[in-house]
Image 1 (cartoon, rainbow, N blue to C red):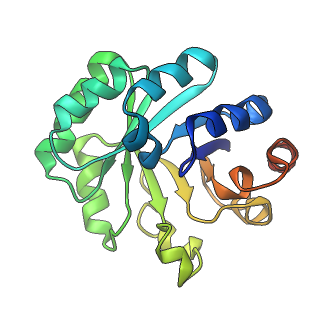
Image 2 (cartoon, rainbow, N blue to C red):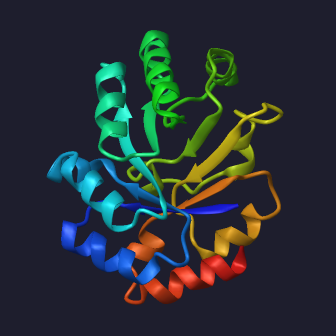
Length: 205
């Protein structure tokens, strides 16, 4: 299982400060949607240049204009970009096509998706990386029901990431199930000691 550090609701300076402390304990840097909206694609370029040994995911949350947004992401140094599962099939196929040209990957964000039929349809289109996602707003009202959400992807030959309140305590549970990427955000970024927390999670892996 890989650790993806989600950087969101942070300044550029805070992103770099946290990465300087955690870079040796994570596998994937996620430049969050809010950070991209604040600073544009320039921050994706800067972070990739500074932390070039780590995989970088641009959380574009693309839902339209798939071709142009994929080109933006990959030209800026992203290794992976996100696309919303509710997007039109053409949008998703366009992003997959561009990703193939650049030898990069597309992560399909399943936020709001409740039916397995849609996931199976996307897998048939060629999608092979999915994110089971309980959104930030929903976390205020419910906790991540991992086993229930896993039914969306159970048995499919795909890689699976999980996001939504993942912390050190939850890592123990995730180790027992077929998860490829644990996306950790505020458990590290809101900590007074991000280095120690990231190291603890890394050790638990």
